[in-house]
Each structure stands twice: as C-alpha cells, then as structure tokens.
Image (cartoon, rainbow, N blue to C red):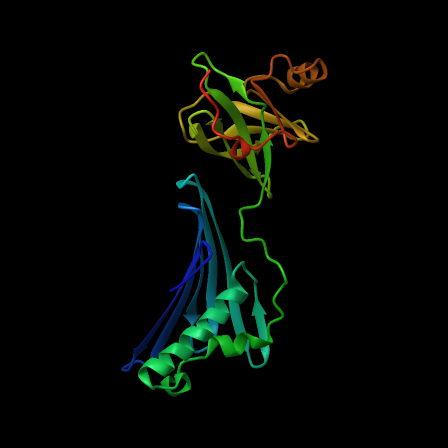
Length: 267
C-alpha cells in the first residue's frame, strides 16, 4: 500500500497451484482510492485473473466507483481480456492497466526481497514481463464518461435550490436521472434509466423498474426536453417549437453542474 497526495494505492497478488492436477491460477488486483481533502472521491480497481492458465489466457476488468461529498454516487465496470500466443499479444486495453502492471512488477520485486525467492523460480508466469511489449495508450479515461444535461437551479416551496439532471452513457442505452438539492447537498431522487427509442428521431422513453411516473426525453442539440411518456411524438415536437412551456424539465449541457454550486443559503 502507498499514499501520495490524496491518492492511496494497494496491490495484491494471489497464486494457487494444485499439485495433484498441476492446475495453476493467478490473480492480480490493483486498487486506487482518491480523496478530495477528507472526503473519498473515487475508488478504482483493475483486476486480471487467469481463465486458462496453460494457454496464457486472462480475463481483465476495470471498475470505478465515484463519490460526491463522500457519499456513493455512481459506478461503472468494463471487461476485457489478455491472451498471449508466442510473441503475439491480443488484448483490450482498460483504464489503469499500464499503471497496474508497473505496480505488479514492483510488488514481485518486494516479494523477492522479503522472502528471498526469485519469482521465476515459482514457475508462475511473469505477467508484467510479458506485457512489456504492449504499446499502452498515453491516456485512457478513468472517469465515468457521460453526456450530462442540467436544469437551471429553481426553488421549491421550502426555499431549497433544486437542479434536475440527466447523465447519458455514451452508448445512449442508459442514463442517470434525478434531482439534486444544492442547498442541503443531497439527492431528491436518483434513478438508473433505460433509454427506449421512440418512433421520432432522438426521442426515448425513460424506463426503470422503480415505481415512478413514466417520462420520456427528446434531445435537440445541447438541450434535453423531459415530457410525460404518454404524450404523442407530434405533441412533443409541437410544444418544443412553441417554446416547451409544457415540458416537465428543460435541461442543457451548457448549464452549471450541480457539483459546482457552493452550499446555498436556504431561502
């Protein structure tokens, strides 16, 4: 484990060898915790484990868990693989992969120093060495990638400042939809939604298993219009052209992110 300027890392290595069957397994886990002053900001993990050790085939995964003011906000997991065939390497590059390999190499060096046993004498594959020939990308995004739409802040009957948001995954299949109270710094509601295409272009029903009123979204450039799901497509388009006076919410990528609001005084 290492600590450096609000960033904590931990590397673990697990090796198993069934002597009777000669079956071997290996798992490497690299974890990163990032802090914003005292608050946990993000937890990230890169993992590699053997799926067919003899064939030098491994499964990889990257998970990120993001926090807002120290409270869990959202998460994402990506999966990949790493296959070796002689000098050829077939792989999917994931975030933290290069950094993880560097720390795995450092860990094996510490193991050798601590126990006086050379890694190559264990007869386990030296993964960091095998990965030295991989041309890692200079920059792979580690954060959750979304297209984020926000409303202007508005005040409810209690005087709390509320921002409605829709954070759309880059595949336009799912989104996070909710409201955030910038006065009290907490969510009003926060749901994961499936985007179900409607007949009109750029129109989607917002579908979730939660028992909430059904709504839809229509995207037009930088703007996302939220309407009740039972409105017809032609009614929605007509209302948008007329100024969207009947929309449940009008959101824009150009509006301020609710995370950027300082704590607001009630009233």
